[in-house]
Length: 369
Ligand code: M6R
Image (cartoon, rainbow, N blue to C red; front, side):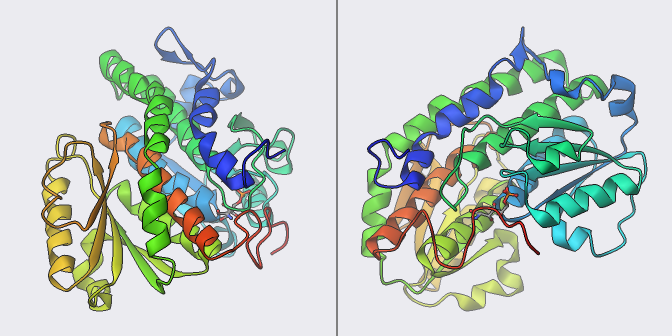
């Protein structure tokens, strides 16, 4: 039940700290990742994997894209992320050295289910990341790592998304330990970062009022762009998806590095652009590049809303609005930066008088093709 909240979505957005905390609960023991559900995957098997293919749709696919950066960095295994419906209708190269990870909140998405079945037929081993106990996709997989976000009722996926990233990060750190690609100290540091996420999300939620005001004055906006680099790129895609599905506004997410390859032509005076700015401490190479992207679009009249780390002053001269997130290591920023984008889409939809829990034309679980 909604329990006093005006919508399920608002309730679920506010439950994100617990969604992450519960997904980690009992899975970090004495500074080590402990996932009993993966016991059927022996260490030798995890060492033999030479490639990971992630299959999912929609928001779940963006969680996979975020995790690609982390798993490749930590475990040094190539990761590709593919939409389930694209994967199953081509002839993907799969063998026993390929691990297929499916991500699905409902565990019932038809295209993802069919893709998992196909992968198994081709001899790949499969792990399901799922939020619904006993759903079909986990039953069709070799192993399942459940996210413990609790039931997600609103059509727009929010708390399941952050929980999916948390579960995938746990898996990535487990893989890194087994494969010996991260030192104990480094592993401990990353786990501590992961465990500090719930509290940081709480901080972001506490500062959400400003996002609401922003949404209100943008209620007549016809198009919004989102830019990000590295892990900020899938967050840009997710911010755009949320706005499309909830507020029915045309929205596009771009990799900021692509600007000059086309999208910058879209910038005209007044065009709102959200930019996810990487940490100046954590991403010394990327931060100045994103700041210069902001300057480029600002010079063409864009109205820039920057999502930037607390204390990052470099964005101030160029951004029209700055939404702050707490300090975090770069790979953990997506778990924080996505929150104001979810709230923005929700508030804008509400300002337009729309039903945020049940947007038009959409179903919570897509069980048909
Ligand atoms: O249940 P699933 O995670 O498999 O669902 C995947 C997508 O249908 C879902 O994430 C969809 O994109 C959401 N409506 C996004 O908010």
